[in-house]
Length: 190
Image 1 (tube, helix red, strand yellow):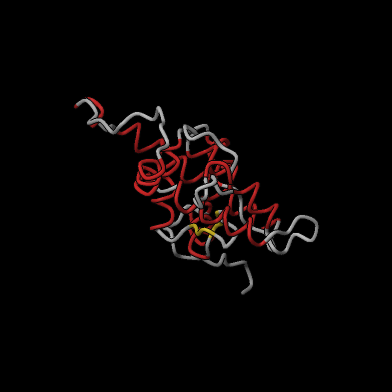
Image 2 (cartoon, rainbow, N blue to C red):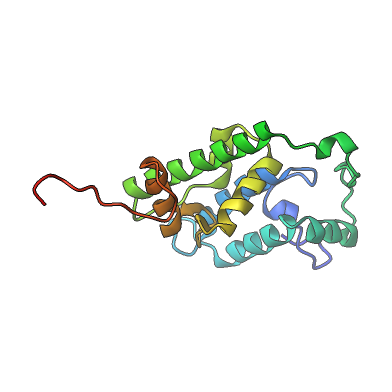
């Protein structure tokens, strides 16, 4: 949607407020991308779909979003980055154990999803975040870790899904063995 000066207003494209957080941005993106996707027989609109993709690519990246806001004069009440107090750097064993538990929950959920819906194994990120009950920053940390371990991937639809390495990890952990190894149980007589 152009603003009369030939510029596309990305906030209007996604129908979000310039002050919206990452979760609202992702929800809007998934809603409109699905609606305008060329494969949607009822509401396909390739031009709007491309606008949605461009808007989301720009607004989801904090640096690109800040530049976009400065360039087009969007005033937001998002706080500027501040150095956190020294106490925020304290990490304890409970934090690490909580992270490990969250990673296990994510992987198990995505594993079950892939087993039950092999043709559509992906899940929208905000749904998993809601299931965990964690903040956006915590969830992004979990995604970063699991993606870099190659346990999860982002699908073409922008959802998250378990990978083969993730499936192997879930199976190994359910057997109490080290990740990445599969053991065949021996039965009597073989």
